[in-house]
Image 1 (cartoon, rainbow, N blue to C red):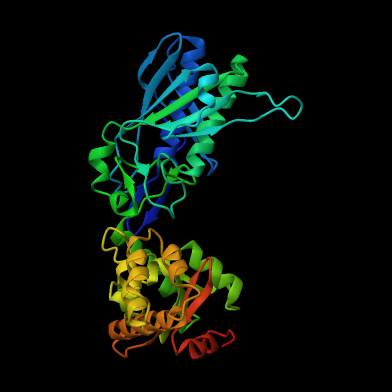
Image 2: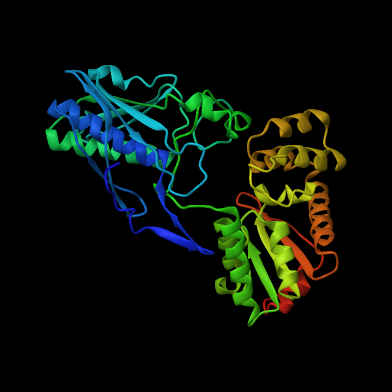
Length: 406
């Protein structure tokens, strides 16, 4: 592997130094750049330079290069750093093919991109048709980032791929049409170890990554980090807000006047965070969490990572049934991909508020069951679509203790 800009990118968790890696999206973009360059130069490329959305520059080595007059292909090997990623080490291939006007057809498994001239309606730069090949999953259910029938190549990787192609085309003065096919020969096998089949992504893995960089997640290291954050906050706070991640942190900052510096990131570890707070002799925790994670807590699932359990729709459907939803809608909820999609099915019916009340009561029950009276625990649950969905009965008291408003 060619030396790249990740040598000095790491985090310290506990007593471990954990390396960063790069995403399947970065692999696809780098392989595309190399293949396009080989197509136009008709010679091998020793290394490609890729600047990720995070601003970290990678220098990656193309593997298995092949080219002729009409197409070129190569692979980039995924390096997940010290993250326990099922796709670590796999090869992500890109084939770039000249296809004239034929690329202007959007195929069943493709996605067309390109800029048009405002003067005559003709392309002023190359048009790019991005497709999924072997081992890349296809979206089969609504509610995901990409439409049904398209390859599971997310928005940011698509943008990265298109930008790399356009840059090479501009360098070589090419303004025709190109077809880019991303593939992962091991993808179909590895997808069975992910939640893709349950999410409605069939036939392979997804090409993912919003930053282009993989930041390592070691379970014990994350729990140690939570403990450290709690310990630091406990010096001046007896009641602490907890958010699972960015969604919760953003919602807390906008809606509650407790200050972003007051919160701890609890990640997936609801039970461990409560236990750690008790061991540090804290008085209370307030979880501010998106329904997509905390609906699991309503079912007693206290580690919300998808590797542990994913009963979101079963729990939501059961609550809606208790609230009086009809059986047909309950089945639709079970088939939903995201909690927001499931909530949409309930929204506007007489079961809406009773469903939210049931979920909130169950979340309150399981949080208190874990805390066992050792400290006060509450929760505010929200959706990015529907706003606040529910709050446990002790939220006003917890907010007052934190110096915020009830």
